[in-house]
Image (cartoon, rainbow, N blue to C red; front, side, top):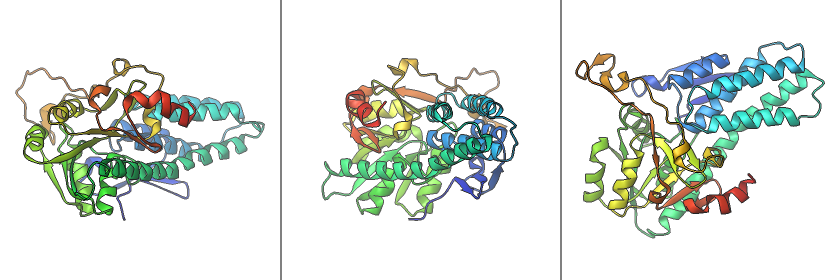
Length: 355
């Protein structure tokens, strides 16, 4: 199936779709440096935890490929500083922080470091490998999620609800939660997909709806506040969302509004799933209370297309994410290794990924 590609990397050239302009215009912008990558992530031209990590690292690859370094120490210092800088663009999403830490570790473990050009080539190759791994992981997530959901809905087409954007525009290709919906559709198991508008940034209305229409998946857009009524009136088989960080006990940070969807799903006895690659799981944090929640510009609430819609003088609270307790993730956490209950993450999944 042909899907939208938000990140295009060919022959050392990096381009992204400026998602701020979707769905009206599909415009590709070239990323030539780490600074370009940082701005694209910070301004949400590219968003989604997996895509942030891949774009950030690829921006470093194109950056160092065009620069000359006299010594390996100079290269290592530059790479380390730029990785730290990239992590600062979106602090809640763990994927880029983990990718940065892994690249630093690979530099330390790299033996033939007497040749600066060899080290540069090695780093670029490692970063380029992230592209295909992301696609492979997403395909596995889609398959595992579809199989798990259909195991309790045999021979019945399902209706599902998703929140924010977790598709090709949030990853390299295919997607996480939206990848599960894609797989359901491909296998003929999907009756209908519902997506929230996802205020205040409208990733659902602008991006998820764009992908669903692009691939002709039967779908309907709802306002965020219609979710409870939707679950009451329609037979929703599952709520499937993505994640920006999953911690040891299964608590999950995701786009603001996810927590209230999980509460609503529990009330209506609808299984609630989180779909995320293991790069999104942070075993260094014990609970969701430790997750740093990014707060964004209040104009995302008060203005629409630069025009103020809210009353002058009103105070605003604009967290970009919230934390869903593990107890509300009743369906499970869908990864490239399978579907796990939150309580199983450390005992089973940590062993599989060797961390």
